[in-house]
Picture 1 (cartoon, one colour):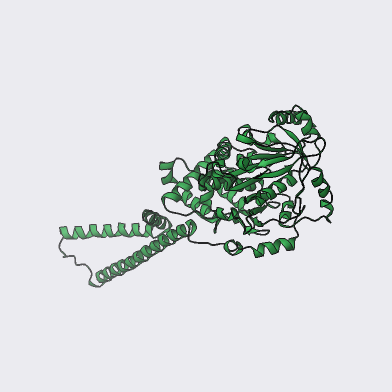
Picture 2: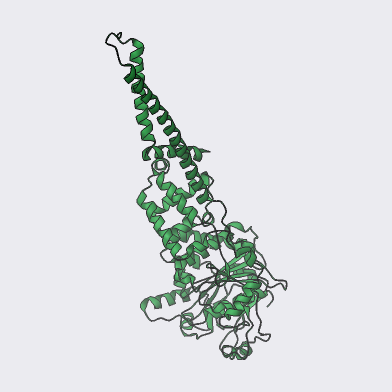
Length: 520
């Protein structure tokens, strides 16, 4: 079958060969099954197929096994020994071992090129999800982002956001009149969550140079699509960070890529492994956003494939959009498992030759129940399928070979070193420094004025002591009373300037000057 990926099939009790049509590959898909039933191998052979067809792929390597895509398999390897037999059984006549073009990525920069985005690009909704903020705290975060836009404060990394929140807290009285109540407790709670994220290594995600989507959509000189592998074995220790990053990447693809209609093959295929993490305790607004992205992103030429243990992990509105399905075995040990198994079977187009629910329960490792979209996007009849063997290495790539591939990549020079340009943190610090210097200058000038006044007053007292006052001196005239009033005014002025030269005075001056600099 032309322009299609061979998935498997064949054998005495199995139907004809099963293919995933590239024309309908952007209609999304599902790979589901219990632990140890073969989901990872299915993901691997689909990635190989897309790459061979010239389609770039992005996937996360949760267990470290998928790095083997960068090396060719071998008949001598123990894990590959049964593969030639299976290839012959299912009629995979042109089965060969081959390596595929791979680019390694890592949020922590240890097992691949660093992946970064900016705080502004991720936005308040996803950061609120990442930090598990309450509704009130999310509102304050939205205020901070609005102020950053209004005052031209770039939010690039975590210290930018932390500095902006400090400024919001200090100016909460004025801001509350316009945006609503801003409590010190809520600002402090957000700062604590940011500190926890920083301690977990999440600060490395935010900064520049930010990831360019074009670097995920490359094809090699031989026409094969690049397979982008995100090292996620360490990242899975922070599941919310993992899910939020992948959702951000999906949203960026949706927002930046142009409409392409109904292409002959996808521009990019995105595999979302451990997909249940995306929806666990997710607010309705976030689920609605994922549903919107899944529904519309196929017109951008992007296919999204969710990989999870149970179809029940995916919300029903999203599950209904997944046309290409590979269902590995599900175990039904509890009443909830049996209900989930029954619901999974009901989502397939029935095959009169066997019972779908029983087939899902009985298929072995490396087998699956499949249904692929056919002409005009119609779901195919469910079939029992032997999954084809992978051409690349089964299992992880050796550390030395991985390091060599990373070192040889032309993307290393672009992403290796972080760039810390002037942003919100530096701009707010400059404002504070300028206001403090102005306050100190005003205080110094006042000290000079006070010293001159003291010298003048001392001179008057000295003059009065030497000359004395005659009893025959005439009575005070009106100008004398005015001079006395002036002395009282000078005394009050000195008191005010003394107060301004103290801590409270410096605060007032900084506030006034800070307002001027903000206006500027």
